[in-house]
Length: 416
Image (cartoon, rainbow, N blue to C red):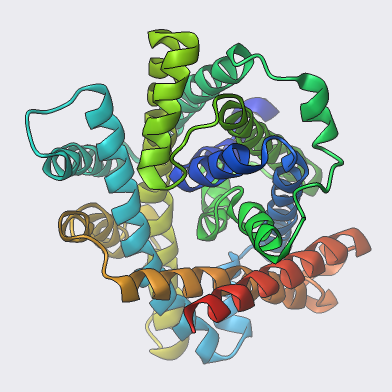
């Protein structure tokens, strides 16, 4: 059988980019642009570079050992690591699903308002998007998801980049933002910069790359160089998206700077500056960003749960795993339903304060945890062989560990 082209085999990185570029990236980048202009372009670039370093480490573990990182956690590390991740995965997935359903519902209602109270209209639209995505993923599998994500990614970048160019920014000022440290003026701005760096490119969803790479490459071998190219393109696009959003927010300076109100304010200001075309360009781009993120989470995160259930039962319950693809297991299907339906209750009733606090803390803790475990596992010659960490990888991962650890401590301090 003829070997397929690199471009057709290695698109798992694009799926990571499309999934990671969601409501969180957009809102965080927009807040930075609205408050600090384009002085923090460097922070977006640094965030993308750090996420690249972590994902590249994940991919090398997969290539060297033939196992996912999650399998490495369960088989190589103490049981407490697996237990922590299992609880975190279930908790994180519930809240992220509720957030995506909320934002995609609000975006759809902003474009085509329903004759309902806004919260109920958002729930109707969000629930419809959630169920349609789940049904199509269940029936169409990875190949359907891959095609749809590519389409929406192209649409998303065309719309957002177009809006950024039409704002007519000072490109010299944008270029200077690559090297400027003007955004670091006090402790509050330092914390804001850390949040921006941590929000670029997603968090737990980067673990999905190994599963998508397996589904994409089928039986064909992939080299570390090919994976680095794949991820390099993905995170370059992620950085470009974040910078475009920052440019838009800096150009129109919306008055509101929180949540979906920020998105609405941006679209209205773009309408004032560019007319209806500008408003619709941004609204459709935002909707595309959130919907692609939803599709990616609905497809990718059930892989994590199914893999976790299989490896945990095999290691600690001594159950012989059934040799079927993860996306054909009952655990995959049940977790897909878990993402699509139960979070609707939280969308309708609202999020209690303690849940938001627990989510902020657990999310901030996960990234240093991930960086630390990659540092440990990928520096073991017996497991990694020739793909053991080089000094460049160790520097990036150590920087990830330190920055995300500081961000976790800041979040902890804020709660208490």
